Length: 327
Image (cartoon, rainbow, N blue to C red; front, side):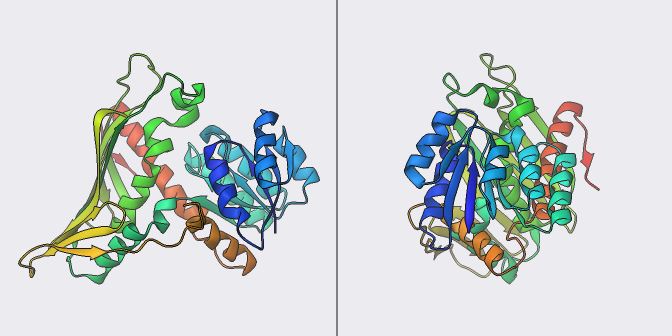
């Protein structure tokens, strides 16, 4: 399988490390507007360096493309690749608007190729196990699922696009789309959102760095999200509570569970899957197999689009101060 990569940053290198160990895959090109960066990728992982992804699409005879560029470029570049007949793995976030998600989905359907969005939490072992625990029913009906993720984000040397909400989507899209995905992996489809958002960094007034949100799940229960990139101490927590018990992640290899039938909490040990030197392998391998065996994409455009619907609702609610309904 001949693969091209768009983008030459850290995410692109992570995907390339995962792909280069697969016997079925040959990286034949990397495209980046700064061609020197693309050349570094080509030197490290093989193939040719391009300054324009359109030229790579014309010359590369590509079976698939990994879109690892900045957020605001995802939609247009993905549509270009799908329209050229290449399968696409697109980095998160899928896009910054629902309309762009629809364009991407339509292009994949029109040209008969597969589109996957790299929602990596779907493949993290302890979060997969937490889903299994919830689905087993031992904790009863869902009361809420939650994610708290807070840290301090140094921005003095940050690329300018990350500080521009229109290009990055701020903390909601670039960072927290993984947590949106986790919370709804427990609760399902979201029907309403109420949120507060803040641009709290005076040195970067266009940088949306904080939000808290309550999600109402269509089939019952709530989701809570809190995220900040301005917390100096930092913390994180993921879990869910049900009518008969609760579960919370402890690091990457344990889950703490307690039900009404337990005298005390128990620890569920979780074994991480082999990542072949790159944590991107866990999401990349299933997509390669889906292409080779003509199976559905592990995280389809239609599926990932709902994360963007929720993200847009968080931003809208933060601006209006009102509950936003997702139809």
